[in-house]
Length: 222
Ligand SMILES: [Zn+2]
Image (cartoon, rainbow, N blue to C red; front, side):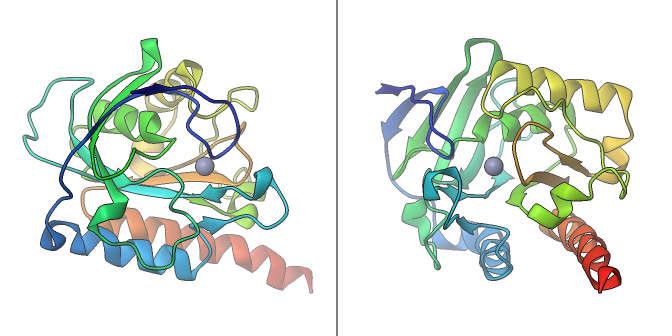
């Protein structure tokens, strides 16, 4: 089945989806723990007054084989439109098997369609082979203060879920210290922040560190 729609938070790239079984609970425990923390902090959730009240935020984990070729690095990711759900079960996680930025096509399988930002996750896994976890959160505070915190930022004219975003992420990896910082902001995707790491702790704690620094801007305003 191929879908291609254009609203924020709703799948805008083309997706080939094959229904299949969910992953084992144990395999998802680590990712799901961070998903719980992100939900509690509002880094994953559902908008109440913008973006058509869409759900936002998605997190993923690489799956074996780790020597898979470019465009085919398998990963598990939170399913499309699950941002509003407090507790996820294995039925809420999709498996991405292929992604082709130049065709704007993602191939996924499992009990649910993959998140609408799967392409960016795949792009990061291809650019940095050592990365095992990619977390995408929404934070108005981090996004607003990205420049002051020296977070690399993608071009403000480029929207998420487009082939151009993959090129922008590639640009950050070749022209900035993003691989060292393990965080970037999406200039053309309001509130959008990505972190990544060797471990879930590295990806998760990078997000928490910058969230804390961003919130400090507000404390000092008072
Ligand atoms: Zn987003």
